[in-house]
Image (spheres, helix red, strand yellow):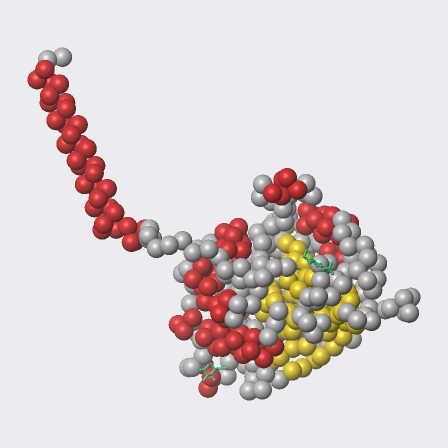
Length: 405
Ligand SMILES: *[C@@H]1O[C@H](CO)[C@@H](O)[C@H](O)[C@H]1NC(C)=O
Ligand SMILES: *[C@@H]1O[C@H](CO)[C@@H](O)[C@H](O)[C@H]1NC(C)=O
């Protein structure tokens, strides 16, 4: 190689380097904002005070919000409202209803039971979720969400949605339970191998200062009932799978709370998921409380969930959504199944049939000088009318202490 070619090569290299550096500079200055690279400080999630616990007055109240079907806010129109209401009605009415419910009921937890957003009406699932859940965050209320069958129809898939939901402020939602009972594994952050996204368990502790302030007195299970599936060539809705039932049974068998004052065994539990189970259809022939106005849209597959609940023994009620104009509670083998009733204005509904929400309140028993375990679980609904009318109040469960007295 002559010294002339070496110098030529060297010059070429320098030119290339200059070109590359200039390109990087141009990309950084001109288009980085479009790539959402921003240099503002990383903000950590604002977490609620955990564990969840009963109040000083011995109550714990959950607001169930079913089927918000949120789109893009003010530009997303309402469905199935009166003609006269149509012009001034959008997703903002859903937001307004959520704020009113929070202010009226002051819940300790909000459970969003799926179809929180309506995928095909939004171009940005994350933004839509931020707006939909917004009022819970504004009020600093812990909230838990599961997915319906419409949430993933936009820019995020189900795994991404649950990840995002778990990272939002004041969220107690989880992607899935930790792997096994092995603490080491759980510490490494591994998730259990389970169908779906958004299967998790929340424990609620007794009232502060009471004998059960460090014990779980109330259990909440959240389940992913899927979206749609094909079974033998036929399209049907999702259902709760074997792996999810096994997780429920394993969690229940841990029997972590053998004696919580009032009774032996696991504390009373509630479940939350989106799509009803097959047996909910049978409730038509029973004395249900509330309105049964449309067919139960569920999977053709028998999930076995009801039998799992029965064998767990402590599940007192399950709260579902999906069928917006059903809002009843009915009892199957000792377990109540309650619809939330459609909440969102962009969701189908019925003109002149108010959007509504369900409230669930658990109350502790009073021992000689301290609150004890859960004594009673009640539910009611409120309509989005002028007075937020309270309807269909009922007792779902009461502890029988007869053997203790
Ligand atoms: C929606 O909100 C607007 C503005 O607050 C209100 O005037 C209207 O009555 C609401 N519509 C319904 C159907 O609640
Ligand atoms: C609960 O735990 C706290 C902190 O460890 C402790 O100070 C308190 O005495 C415990 N209360 C009961 C009733 O065990």
